[in-house]
Image (cartoon, rainbow, N blue to C red; front, side):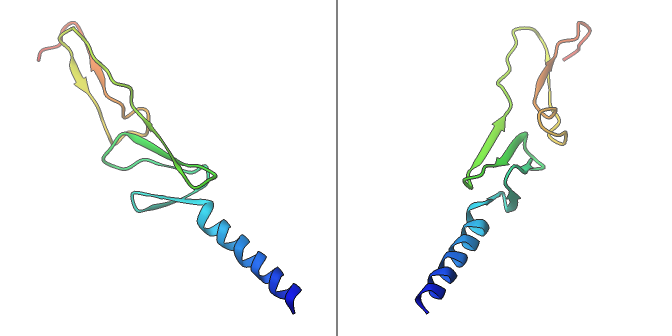
Length: 93
């Protein structure tokens, strides 16, 4: 019975690793490896990595010296949700 016990232990361990290590959880969302998630109220993209970690992408920092209007729409998909400056010549602040 020892070989059977060993095989069962290996199967259980393998199943546990697939369930626990191959998935990620972020913001209450379960992700599969390679799957991405963007929270509805933020402009950030999370991607589930093979080791169970989360890779996050954020927007670059933007700045301007001109009189411009900061535009952002967090409801857009990433990276379209990133803020940018509208520096139209006829812009009224």
